[in-house]
Image (tube, one colour):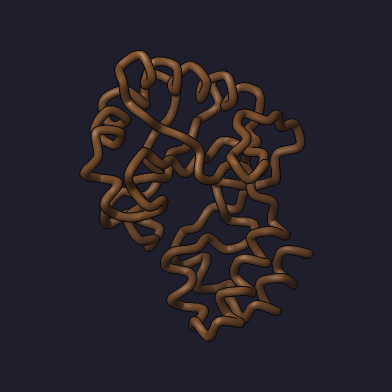
Length: 171
């Protein structure tokens, strides 16, 4: 109910969410730091996703591929703040929801999703698909349990996000 109240306050039509087939995610409760950026921001993942990320990154480095975390775990309240800021900037909610997950419906809440960057490219740009890092990920990420969540024409109606990969917990 808390999430539904949040959505109503943001002007998000709940029936439209259901029509898009979006999946509701619980926030991860057990997280660990996997990286810290130059500004001191800690990136968190679940222990299993963190182990898989470290192995994936080590293999990428061995193959001379530069990758780093741009975003990892994100709380529902932070997701709400991100959307609120976009609304305050005058962006319409329907436009926001093409590029930004609804609070409670982001894979980042699970502690298993990462947005990945590489050298010499501004983060979170479609051009990521033209990088050596992206080609390496498409060939190797599955070996570590990661898959591309939002390919072109994805069923959820999100824009194509070649930088967004999610680890699926292994039994």
